[in-house]
Length: 163
Image 1 (cartoon, rainbow, N blue to C red):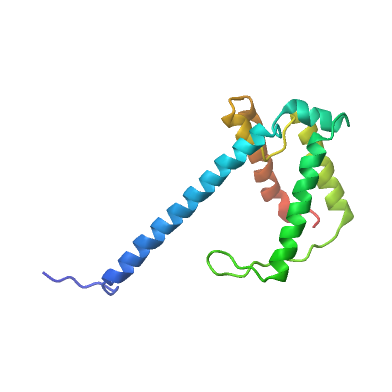
Image 2 (image 1 turned 180 degrees about the horizontal axis):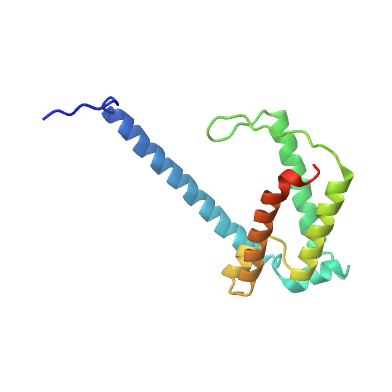
């Protein structure tokens, strides 16, 4: 029994390649999941997700959070310099390109103030939201929903905003 189609029959090795690529993608996602869980554990153990620690920071009562944020800035700056200096590529072999910043004081001040106000009012920045949910604080689901809604609103309004 023969059928005619406009598409040529797929080669068996092509199907095997697609199956292998699917598994590689799934394993890659599993790696991100494991790293995310470890990151959440580190956030929890280092008290980065602690509302009290965040309030201490905004009241200038403790160095704890400033030390963590400062350490992250130093590590990020060194990492970017190493990526640029040694022409690092992604796991897929693509070059990592870091576009130059377009400096505009207004947008950085406005964004920083809005972010800081939300952080101070909520007592959590977007990074630890999932760790807080995992630690058993279901009220943070409201914060997650608000963050998703805010991200969606920015995406919808972005073409109309001055950039």
